[in-house]
Image (cartoon, rainbow, N blue to C red):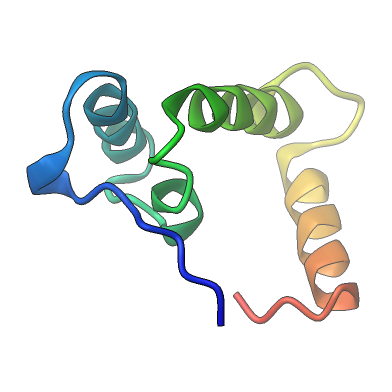
Length: 81
């Protein structure tokens, strides 16, 4: 099984620490999908910007509809989270 070394809270500094703090402000915690991107804070930041634009930006779909599309897509792809 692959293993990705993640940045833990105690070892976070600089950009990684800032991204972890932003994650906590957004969600009240750091989800695993966020933590797994901590070794590359630029990728984490870009991923979160995309997520926020898709889920919270202007759209003809309601927030509920967007969440429903995400759930159906994850289910169809066999994701268990």
